[in-house]
Image (cartoon, rainbow over all chains, first blue to last red; front, side, top):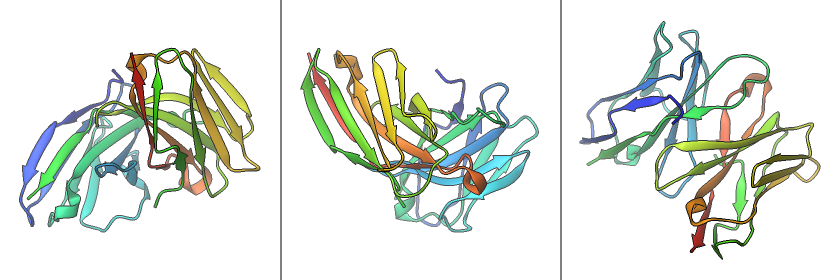
Length: 114
Length: 113
C-alpha cells in the first residue's frame, strides 16, 4: 500500500460524455502526476501538478484537464470522451525537492468508453 | 511516446532461477526507475538509480545503469512465483521535465512454481 487512493475503481461511459477521476495523495506529498495506460502498453504521462498549478504536460489534447486542491488531492477531467480514452488511469504522488524523485502510484481507475 | 524499450517482451522461468530484464532509452536522464505491476493494477516502485550511479542493490534486486550505452538492466535473483508481474523501466530526464516519467512497454515475467 502506497497511501495513494483513487476513485472510482471502475467506470463505464459513452462516447462524448465527460468524466472526473479523483486522487488522494500520500501524506506529505505535494506533487501529483497523472498517467494513462492503454492495454498492453506502458503508462504515458498526462500532466503534473505542484502547488495547485500545472507543472508539465505530456502529449495529450486540452480536453484532458486537471485540478489540484490545497490538501494536494487532485482531479483528472476528460471531456468529449473518445473510444481510445479507454484505459487505466493512474495517479502518482511524491514530495518536492532534491532526492524526492520516487513516485508512489495509486491502484488506478479503469475507464471503459463505449 | 515511449522512451524506454524493454527486452525481452516476455520471460518465462522456473522458481529459483534468475530473471534479467533490459531497458534501453534515447535521451539523457536524471534517473531511471523500475516498477512492477500485477494484473493491471497500480505500479509498485522497486528501485531508483541516478545517472551518476552504476549499480544498486535492494534485497534480491540488482540494477545496473550504463549511461554511455543508454541502457539499464534489472536482475531478480532466486525468483519466486510471487514475482510474476509486468516490469517497467521509467526514465526521468530532469531539468524542465523533472518528475515526468517516460515508461517502456514492459517485460511480462512469469515464474512457474
